[in-house]
Image (cartoon, one colour):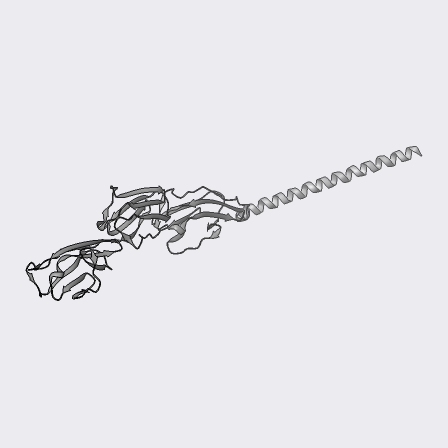
Length: 338
């Protein structure tokens, strides 16, 4: 009985080994067939071969780009299998051809992006994405345009009298430093003087200060700011209210009792409105008997004595004032025989 069991065990082992060897041979034959089919397919249909993923070379925009300049970059595939599809993006948004922006395929491996004239809105991150059947690669470059300066408006105070202080500030609102500031008065370049000072507050701000304005301070003041990308200019009118200046006047020298006498007080320079006042021997004349006072236009006042007598003798003064100051002139009236 023991001999029989041993025989069955050996027989079973032999069958197991035989089956294992058959399975191994069958698997190896099938793998060989598959490899042969794959190689045959690749030889007969090379387009079905596994493509290599594209590799894009780096590209950069020029560092110094001013508004109005031309910018171009080239996206070149360094390795990989065509055909390729090129896609350009700006700030992760697909870039479409618009006025001034063109995308051109140079050959199967190269695409060019050209911006005819860069502006402030050209700034951004530009990406070239290249894909084929195996995958894609992309590279990016930052475009930074140096923007020309833009100045904010400025004004002098509306009411400036002689002797007052005047100041304005020229401020750059947008643009890339460094800036050059230049001040002009009536198109003539301004420099520091004992009354005019020009001072830089920071990289974006310049001050103009006139310590004491005079009549000759009147004019058109301009601030011009420039950088490598361009310039801007703004202007403001300074109008100083000038103190009145009265022309001299005199009574006739040969006035007899009963004659008529008149003088005219005329403002030669200064800014209206004016206030006219008449005085005799330091006392203000207010509706005096026999004397009439009347303004003739904005710049002239007349004093008329209908009939002079001994009481008319004296020193007559015309005083003219405005918000900037005043002036006065006097004349002596002397009646003969009194």
